[in-house]
Image 1 (cartoon, rainbow, N blue to C red):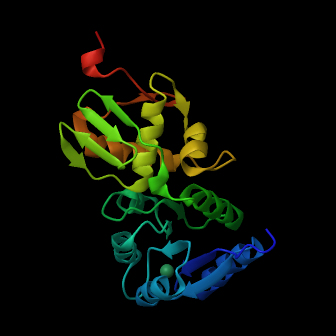
Image 2 (cartoon, rainbow, N blue to C red):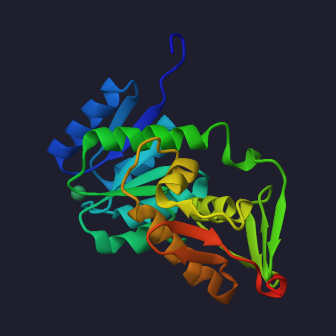
Length: 234
Ligand code: CA
């Protein structure tokens, strides 16, 4: 990677020991690292440093991680990896209102954090909007990859970035069962068998948002697939 400017990762965490430990691992993986110990400082550095990705702790002393992530989302597609102390925060974090790309529950393995950062950045380039134009119809559901829009009976359903990518991946392989590991690799870019709970969390959110138009079928012990649409079943 000689001559290539390293990408900047912003680490937002008020616990200095965790922040410096995460920063050290990211630096040794070749990233420029900036750190912020509060939400307001994070938002300032997002503006001034234009990082490629933000590692964002949920619990911060001033503006919490949820609010920081929402504000980042309002300004564009900057990827966010959330850190959380508890599993039960996860639905909220991944959901539309917050829209993080991925999450890790503390305590986490720093090597896995670096692997996820790398995977998210690889997926983010050259730009999420540049997927070829394609539209898939499935019963009442219409998904437009070019516009990154999902509609149910004509009404747009707001999906977080990874929710959209996961839905697309499943629709694009209609009838095939995809394992959680395959989905992690294709949607999140992990090239190792990681923690697959993030797949289940995203599927749960998609089902909640799409309601009876959700095409996703659980294949117990294996993974997920998209079944035939109701009006195509016969
Ligand atoms: Ca914290």
